[in-house]
Image (cartoon, rainbow, N blue to C red; front, side):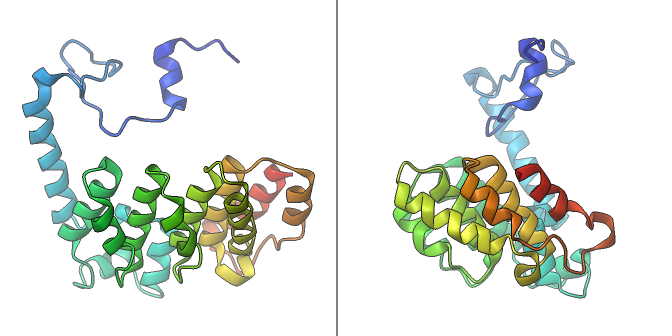
Length: 231
């Protein structure tokens, strides 16, 4: 531990919102030049190309895994993507706007009431970045588990002990694989692992949770492993 240099350590640190590298002078992509005004035009160009590509390919990466499986049901992600049920142009703008800070509070609030859960998820992410706990509080009961989990993460990161307790209680409910399914349980347990203090009470509560419930074959042991790590 503590033996990585600054460039190596970046791999384990939070990423900035955007990254831009000069591959001629910096082929190892160490120095992020996205904030350099001299690169503003190129950054705008590449950002536009990225958003266009996401829309044209109908990028299902905009869906958290649990939400993707919830809306797809017995079908395939690609089948859902090309079904016309989602406006990817609007979704790309929503995700980008929520996480970049470009949307107003009023626009995020409207998005939080969207009929499709994936839009509400990005609204929750946007409000989490703004530490808007008042708006996030009712969202912990959203019918889409990923929205509730995202809202809980925002409350868990706040300095309000009452809201932290609310988030903990709700996350423990969402981590029940028999009630909410494998992918939602994994998402909830990841937030518990990264955002909540590992108290003895929390460990006791986690130990009571089911470890499996007809899991997908490729990820069948994930819930159990996350519960083991938490304890």
